[in-house]
Each structure stands twice: as structure tokens, then as C-alpha cells.
Amino acid sequence: MRTKILLVLLALLQFPLYAQYKNPMPAVPAPLPINSVSMEDLNAFTEVKLEIPIEKGPFEPTWESIEKNYPGEPSWLREAKFGIWVHFGPQAAGESGDWYARKLYNSDEIAYQNHVKRYGHPSESGYKEVLRDWNPIHLDPEKLTKIYQNAGARFLMIQGVHHDNYDLWNSQYQPWNSVNIGPKRDLIGEWAKACKANGMHYGVTFHHEYTWWWWQTAFGSDKDGSKKGIPYDGNLTLADGKGKWWEGYDPKMLYGIDLREYKGVADAAVSKWSPPPAGIFSNHLGYAKWFATNWALRMMDVVKNYDPDFVYTDGTVEGPFTGNGTGTGFKADAMQSVMADFYNRTLKRHGEVNTFSIVKFRKKTNGTVNTEEFGIPADIKKDQPWIAETPVGDWFYAPDFTYDSGMMIRYVIEAIARDGNAAICISLLPDGSMNEASQKMLKEVGNWMRLNGQGVYASHAWVIPAEGEMVNGKLKMLPGGALKSKHATFKFDAQDIRFTIGKNNKLYAFCMSVPAPNTQIKIKSLGTDAEHYGKKVRMVKLLGYDGNLKWKEAADGLLITCPKNMPFATAIVFEIE
Image 1 (cartoon, rainbow, N blue to C red):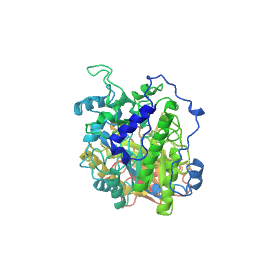
Image 2 (image 1 turned 180 degrees about the vertical axis):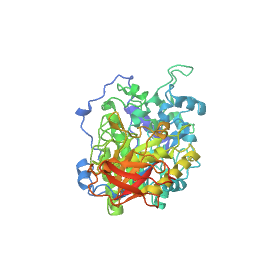
Image 3 (image 1 turned 120 degrees about the vertical axis):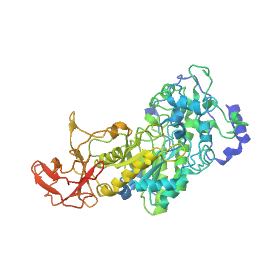
Image 4 (image 1 turned 30 degrees about the vertical axis):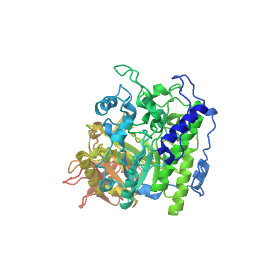
């Protein structure tokens, strides 16, 4: 072991680049045979206190301290309601949709075939070559921020690091970053500048918690063919880079280390989604502590240098490093450390805590905001602030996406009617530009928002979210999943209605389609026998229409006759008081 450590230190001395970076990776043991080691029981493993230095203030790195001191959801999130998910990075270069970096090491995937055509075999040219060549020359955060703003977005969710482990800022803890390799640009810095200049709230998203098991495909090889058994480039070492373009950059800092000795990791690596079975990487506790610490330090680096309005962590369970779900491998207080540092720093900078932390799938916890990926709850959800999130097509670009403003607008309506917010990803092209179809779609969304924003911005749910057609005993809703052709062609009629209460305390009724001229709409939930509204209707207005509407209250509903001209798109909105 001493010999191995000495060799690592000598290698580091040969490549002084790493002297610039903080928190270097410790030595790790040689990998054991695949599936030969059982995970340690997570329930018998005590959560590790990382003791990372944080900004001084009232927040300590415990859930108890965070809940006690956090003042509650910032008002700006309620005001914003609609945002754009800027889910963009080098994986767009594969034009293969989401998870390109992982899938390019699986010969059964289209991403593998696309990679071989573009870059060569992953034993020779792997993801590191994608990073080297990626240069989004047409990425213009200032221009894009204005486009998003014109579409009605009030906040941006900007990818800081995806599962690929490549930081999109001038990272102090990850040398594989966009300033050193690829575009040679501080992309988060550019986004932060553009957002602040245009009064746009923004957060930075972090997906690197489960990088260590997500990347295990890079340690494999082809199962058949002329390259059968030749190791992919995840197996390369720092010393292998001598004389190469990547000299001085340790592949372990990008791909992580081979963890396939743990039972279930190898199988999970080639699955469509599943993380490994729950448990602790017991042979790698030193490395695991470093990994969790480095994960937190990178987030804290962004908070310190870019002052975001929120941070976002991806996952499937109660939080990062829980030992199960996407948090498999280790248990530590990394998330609590990040949040305490973030809120103390916010208090010091702004005099108040008006920021928040998205911890995906976290139970109700004062200080966190949750998300609903793809699907939207059937009922109103007021237990905690939440953001519905979905992409148009996929989270990274691929050809043949469906671009339709109607499905975007209806997704937003479904979310706000249930007291949520909505953030939608419109994938950029590999060079950072936005195709014409996306631009047209966003212009149409913006036109609709300007007309109907009174029912959207700063709204909250009414006593019920909706009324309309029932299918198998359930309310018909926009389907779940990424927004695709089935969403663009999904049929609503004018009796499918969603509700919100606006900032002005007026009731807004959204018809999920545009009725024909002179059509009579019956809002059953506003009938005098329904007892939902609780008061007599005094006024009914159609947003975007200046004339007087014909309407009357009846026992079985509020009856509204549409004008003879209906020059509207997607959905109409009635203002009622």
C-alpha cells in the first residue's frame, strides 16, 4: 500500500496541474473481481459528519438547524411560477438525447453507434475527447435570457454539472471543467452575468452525486466484435496521459473509479435507469468521504462565486448520500453542509434568506423545495413548494423533437392549478444555438403569457384544481413524460377547465382549448348548488377581449357565451369575481 501511495505522489509531482486544485483524491485500492463484494448495510452505517468549513451564521449543517432558522419560501418563487430549464452541456454533442456520456460505453445503445461514427471507438476516443472538441460557439446567454424572458419565464434553472462530472464553471475542485477543456469559457459565469443584468432569477443545478455509479460503463469493454475485451478509456490512468493532449488531467477525476466489485453495480451500469442496490461502498470509505466532500465543495464554490438564487440537487430519495436510491454508496451530511453554507452566505450578502435549495424527492422540510419530474399530481399539493419539470423532447438534444407551444402552455396550466411552478427544458443544439422551431414555440408561449399572465404569475390554487372529462374514474389530464407528439395532439375540449386564484384574489378559469365562436361554456364548479365559490358572481371577463360577455349563474353551473370572434390560441382564460 505504501508503494502504491508513493507512486501516486510521484505521478502528481510529474503533473503539477493538480497542485492548483484543492481537495485532491486519495489513493484507492485496486479493484476486486466484478460482483465479488456485498454492500454494507446502510441501516447499520452511521451518517458521517464531514466537518466541512462553512460560512459563519445561524445555520448549522443539520436538518434541525436548517428547519429552525429558515424563514420560509421566498415570495419571488410564488411570483415567478414559470421558468426555463437550461439543461445544456457537452452531452448535447452526441445528438443522442439524455445520458449520452454513459450510453456511449454501451454497444447496445444508439449513443454508442453515434459516438463511433463521430469520434471513434471508446477504447481510443471516449467522452474525454467529446469534452476536448465541444465548443458551443453560438451559445449566447445574454441573447437567450432575453428570449426566455420574452417567452414569459421569470426564472432559469441552469445546469452546472451533469452526471458526466464536467463542471461548467471555473471550478476550484474539478480540473475537468469548461475553462480548462473544451470551450475555454466560464459558462456559469456568463449565465450569472446575463441573468443579473436582465433581472432574471436563476439557480444552478448539480447532478454529480451519483456520478460514481453512473460512470461504471466507462470501465467495461465491447462484448463482441473486433474490439471485444479491449478496455474503454475509463480504465486509463494519469500516467497514461504522458505526451497526450490530456497530459496532467487524471481520468479518475472525470470517470471516477471502478466500483463494479460491489454486487449489482455492473448490472445497474447497463440498465436503462436503475441505480445499484442500496448499501455502502465499504472497501472505499476514504474515497467515499472524499467524493462526498468534493461534491459539496463544488456546490459551495458556485454559491460563493456566482451568488445564485437557488441550488438544485438531482436524485430519487430523501437527499444526496443517503446510502440508498441514487444516494447509494455512502451516508454523510453533505447536503446539510451545502445548505447551511448557502443560507449563511445569503444572509451575509443580502441581509435576508431569500434563496432556496431544491432537494429532489425530499419530504416536507422547511428550507427545501421539491420537484415533480415529468408527471404532475392529480390533486392540489400545498405541503411544500414544488416545481414541475419536464423537457421538450428530451433533456439533451436529439433530432426529430416535436415543438408545440400548446403542450408547453398546458403543462404550465396543469402545474399552477395544483399550486406548483413549472420549468420546461428546450434543448439547445450542440453549438449552443436554438433552432427556429424552438424560437417560434417560445414566441407563441410569450404571446399567450402576456395575454393571460394575470391568472399565472403569483397565483395559487383554488379549492379544487380542475373539472372536466373523467376517464376511468379519473380527471383527464395532460399525459406525463417528456413533452412529445402525444402531448401536442392530446385532445381537450372547452369543458376541460383548470382554476387558479390570482394575486388580485380573483378566480381564473382556464379552458384547456379554444371554444368555437358563440359556444356556451358551463363551469359546473361555479353552479349555485356546487358551493365551491361561496359567493355570488359579480363579473366575468375573458382575458384579451374588450367587449361584454353574456353569462348567467345557474344551479348546475356558471354559463358563459363566447364572443362571435375568438382569435385566441391554445387556451382561453376567464376572470371571475
